[in-house]
Length: 113
Image (cartoon, rainbow, N blue to C red):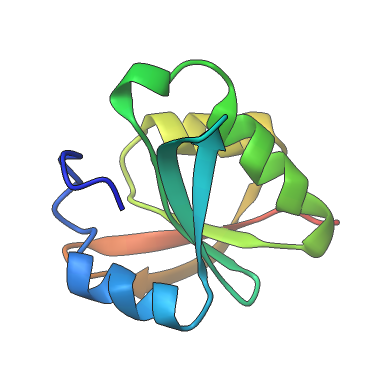
């Protein structure tokens, strides 16, 4: 993992290492350059990160779309953020379920395969 990235506070490096050991941490590359990562725990899509200089290029859209046929779920905060706008655009809907995250309550979103 690129050590120069400033990760959001809810992405804890120790936890990411555990996901990596379980084979659930997937790196995103542009050629040989590591530009981000995401965690997929069974059908739960977690911790998507794209390096700031590569944001706005459709990378997150492409990755999420590739897993829609698998019937994945994604958690977001209550506030309207970029990822929530994106998954709504991709056809995800709020399931009505909420879980407690590390820092706040999270809404569970699903997209029927």
